[in-house]
Length: 56
Figure 1: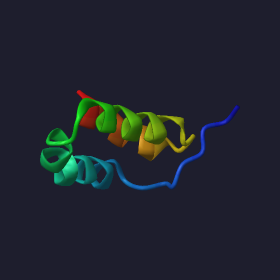
Figure 2: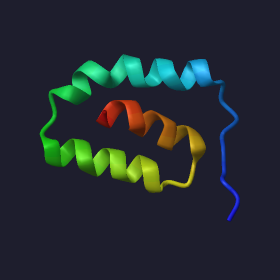
Figure 3: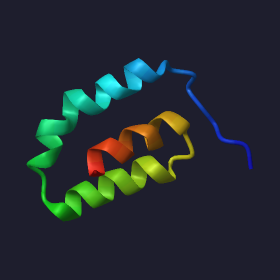
Figure 4: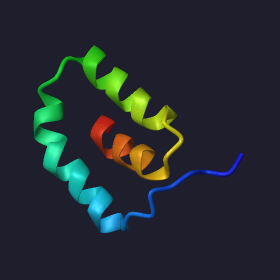
């Protein structure tokens, strides 16, 4: 199955993760898990790439 992508630049994807990282850290573990799982399972490369640093 080919991976779908928005074709966004890596720098933009990293900036999204940085921009929302602090607010995301304040969420409950359940909320963080649900969001990162949804991002990962979206099938979009960039959404998975945002999920990894957020959950780390």
